[in-house]
Each structure stands twice: as structure tokens, then as C-alpha cells.
Amino acid sequence: MRPTGSTSALRSANLARVVTVLRTDSELSQAEIARRTDLAPATVSNIVRQLVASGLVETAGSGGRAGLTVSIARGAGLVAGIDFGHSHLEVALGDLAARPLITSRRKLDNDHAYGDGLALADELLDSLLTELGEDRSHVHAAGLGLPAPITKDGRITAGSILPGWVGVAAADVASKALQMPTLVDNDANLGALAEHSDHPEVSTLAYLKVSSGIGCGLVLDGTLYRGGLGTAGELGHITLDETGPLCRCGSRGCLEAYAGGSGLVTQLHSRIPDLAVHDLVDLADAGDAGARRLLEDAGRALGQGSAILANLLSPELIVVGGDLACGIVVDGIRDGLRRHAVDGLGGEIAVRVSERGDQASVVGALVTALDAVALPL
Image (cartoon, rainbow, N blue to C red; front, side, top):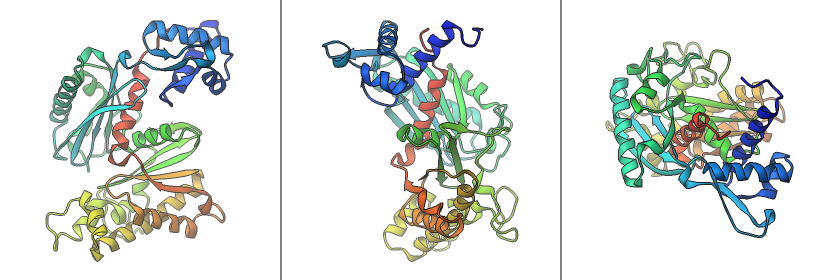
């Protein structure tokens, strides 16, 4: 191990700073890299030469440092992103700046065995590589998202959404099945990573995934927050009314029981038996009064939960993603912040629908995969 503060440790830290900055923009001048990293231009120039020699970055232009632009090299390899949802699997391949290049999505039963799910992910990964004309050896690492709390030791303990993964050391079995280093995280955490990569100027944000269930990913002071036990962000299971409806977690009156998509569509099944969660927003937009009312009610409940979040953590930005992300729900959250957050706080917090849509978690999986990619030292 290198001693803290050694020359080699400082060199590695400076290199990592440059690579991190390059991953936020498609290309930057060396002068801009120096400004963003607070490194001397000569230091940046030396690091860029090292990165070019390793094949991680490429340069374009001429005329010295000012005219030279630097970007992550497409030929440096790939990372994979895998997102297991309540009823779908999405796989993506991205470059080493976590920019998606190609994706594939399949329906998937939520009661699948974890081995079957990983086998399908492996199959989709091979198919995407074939389409890109790439080889598996060019994929450095994978990130994988699951819609469940993941403990500090990497295990799934709650089986109400994906019962076939309970008790599984997800990163270990995924790394073995995919034959590459694989980092696993909660899908809402990955959504928060994707949103923070889009808004690096925001130091503290919350990503609300509003789909079959309710998830919440938190970025605090620029860093994804998982909590001491690894399961922070379970906003869907705060209690709004202890005498309320039974939640899938076994408690009563949870936020998810009022705003989770599975519960909402159940209320319309007598009229629309085949309604799926992802159809609800379209139904409301088409003028269905019942669907619109359900989304309004969900927005109000999420507003109460978001106000608790605001009072505790004071995020600058709340991004709403998932199947039920829409203007109706966002309006309810804004109203809840206005009514329930401490005076003056609600109006300061920006609330918006995710621009990533239903790809936020798989993009976040690409971002987290970068943590397993070794930098050239």
C-alpha cells in the first residue's frame, strides 16, 4: 500500500481527478481541465500524455495546449449496465465515460430465479456486443441494479419484489455469471448517480423512483449515500398512517401503499383488467378521470414524504423518475413541499421529471461500473 501523501499517491489522485472531469464532458481543452481540477497546466499536460499512451484518452486539434482537445477514447473499451426492474430487464453497453451506446430491454417475471435472470442478462450482453462488432474481452466491468434494499455485505434481504434474489450475494454471483467484475446497487441509487452525472453542479439531490414501488437514491455533498447499514433511502416505507392500508413490506400506511404503482393499478383492475403500471400515465393523459385522480393522490402522498426528506436533508434538487414520473405527480410533490416543509425551504427545492426517463437506472449502472475499471498508473 502506498503511504498517504506519498508522491505516487498524489500522482494517482491527480490522474483520477483528470479522468473524472473528462467523464463529465464529451471533450475538453487541457486549459479547461486545469481550471476544473485546480492542477497546474504542466501537470495536466503530463497526465494527458500518460493517458494517451495508455489508450484511455485521445486528443484532437493542434496549436499547443490551448488548441488541443481531450476526450475519453472510444477504443479504450466498454462497460455494461444491467437493470432488473419489477417486470423487465434492461442491458446497456457504454464507453468509459458511461455514455450509452446501445441498449436492449426484455420483459421478465418478477418471481424469476436469480440464475435465470443473470443468464438472460448474459445473453442480451452477447447480442449487444455482436451488434457493435465488439468482443467480451473489451468490456472492463459491469454495474447491476436491483429494486430491493441491499445490505452492506451485498445481500438482498427483502423479497417482496424479487423473491428469487433473497439471501443472494448479488455481486459475487453476477461477477461469476458475467465473467467480469460486477458492482451491484439499489436501482434508485443508480438513478441518483445518473442524475448527478447530468447535474454535477448540484451537491445534494434526491432521486425518487416512482414505479411499482417507491425508491429513493440520495447524493449528499456530491457522494452517493447508502447509510451505515447500506440500505438508506427506503422512503417508500415511511409511515403516513399506521392504520392505513397494508403494504407489501408487512407494515400499514406506508408511502408506497398510497403511491406505489402496483397498488394504484389494482384499484382500476375491475374496469381495466390488463392495465400495467407503465400504462397509467398514458391513460391519465388520454383523459381517464380515475387514472388522473390516482396520480393526483399519489403526488400528494409523495409530497408528504418529500417534505420529510426536505426537512432532514435539504436537497437542492428532487428528480422524479420511473413509470409514474409525470407532471401530475411533480405538481403534487411541489404542493407537499409548500405545505409540509419548513418555512421557506419548499420553494427553494427544484423538482423535475427525469430527462433520462426509464433509462436512469441502467445509465447509473454504467456510471457505477466505472468504479471497477482500473486506471493506468
